[in-house]
Length: 222
Image 1: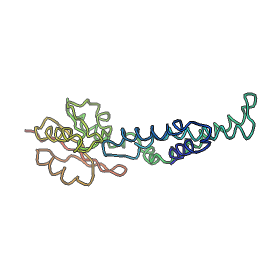
Image 2 (image 1 turned 60 degrees about the vertical axis):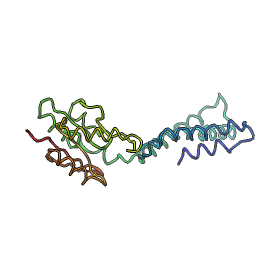
Image 3 (image 1 turned 135 degrees about the horizontal axis):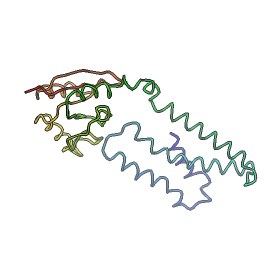
Image 4 (image 1 turned 90 degrees about the vertical axis):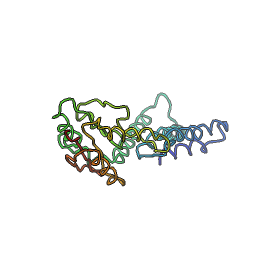
């Protein structure tokens, strides 16, 4: 956790040279940032990336220590530039390898579930689409359509925190105001599939991609 290292280094290294309140600054910033990010009780992996901003605190102190050790000044910037380039390369490499998207980047656009499902949706004129019970997965973009309902996705908020979002999505399906529904596999998938089918929808296709299977439903013609 490089961000945690930055907070600790800034708070305790060379602490005699800084005021006590100054040393507490990163801890206070981290605390309030955490409250804003995790208040919704949902924490995907990528939520943690914002904390990498604290890593710069460690690099500042390391750079100062190196500058003092090697007596770097304005007339001798070669080592400073080399250190900056090395740090940038290291950070970029770690970020790329930890993103979990290396295999995903090798998939051709035409093979993505978003575009395969989008082609089916576009066959129906002025078709409406609902990204049901998960965060926007790019299916509106793939289908080249604009959501016609307010709650067009499930944001990362628990039902306890914001029940209206999930209740409204269920109502859209019950009222039949959506032509196509796309959802994905998860722990409660069987329950949601049964609900969608009971409301007059047919399973059109299922697409496996990464760790999920995406399901496309279409409203029966009445």
